[in-house]
Image (cartoon, rainbow, N blue to C red; front, side, top):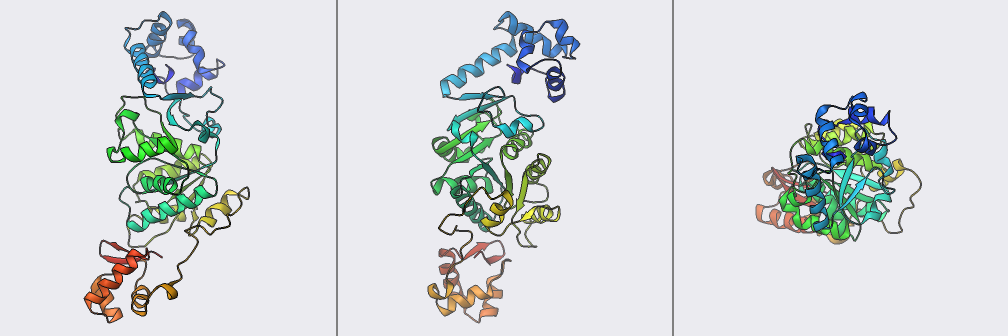
Length: 364
């Protein structure tokens, strides 16, 4: 009921909490008491309707609709009064009053790390997201992200494909999933993790919902890793919120020519930890973890000489981490175009290079 009340934002809630033991106490308070705390008439009216059990009142009717939808969809509600409400969320600004959840409740008590980034990610960025997610999950973290296209989806998939848990926070009701392309991924998250939203069934995604969603991602996480981000992106909002909430912020650097690397470079200039391997993240977060016996996929390097022939080695050595055209590579290697393309294809199949706008670049 509290989450559906109009004109009942953060300041009003804080005023109520300064006078009452809990927010739910307003549901039985008298009009005079509510007015004395500065609660507006727009909020008092539905409270009184709730007290009268007036199911025809639009706010009360909406609450009952949400309750029925949750019951029908197997959705469970998490409120600030529940014992397993994530402790870190109690301490953030504008903590959510209610969270709608599907999946494994036990994940709420596990250490989490957020992985976020550009929706228009490069192939290298998607690869980084998958590998870092799998390796960090192997170390015991729940991988938390926003189920968006690009880096978010790759992070969830990376954890799931490696057999680990993941938690997704979305900016809509479960029945209005956005983006719709991630319906199958969301189903995997529900089966092998936890899907969460601050928004009730029936609520469509809106632009204003995503910064709100981001504060939950960062608020539940011990740290946030930004893989790729433009200078004006939601990922930077998540990073800023993480800093405000006292969380660690990590960023993977990229090419100086790449627009999706500029946000990460900006964060690094502002003091975010530059990340090249998973160990960089683990060292910053503390010594509670113990490295696994096997090297993570982001810390190991391919044994090039034993796997590649001299022509492929020459092409790989000519490539940098910035895009290079095939004309440039032909000039530098002296190879004819057909042999160059054959070598590039083989290198790409081995996960050593990636085709990108402008040509090819090395990713390992």
